[in-house]
Image (cartoon, rainbow, N blue to C red; front, side, top):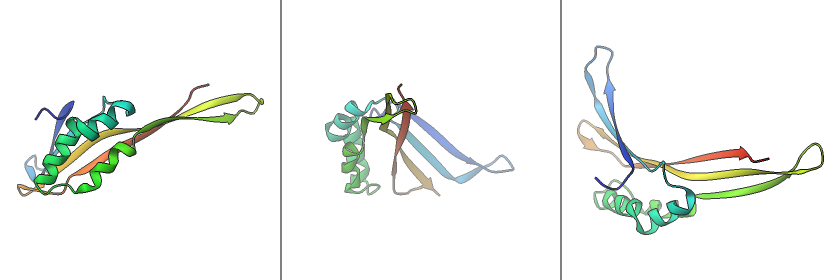
Length: 120
């Protein structure tokens, strides 16, 4: 496909070992830091992927807001001892998921990850 870092194939395995009627593709963007995510979704491979999904009727224009939702921000706070620390919050792209039920593609979903870390 060429749009993403990796593709995971997901099968619905039934208790008897047979495959169910649901098949999924997870298209990973895990390696993109926030500053590259904006570019990816505005004019790079993420934009190309989402436009393709939109052309196929699997996504709508909401994907265009993803570039505004990825960030890394430091938040200062006062510690118990009176000194200051920094807590970093990062929102980054995770993956787009396409499911197929009975061979018919369903609307795609896009997932973001929100992480935090105390840097002091």
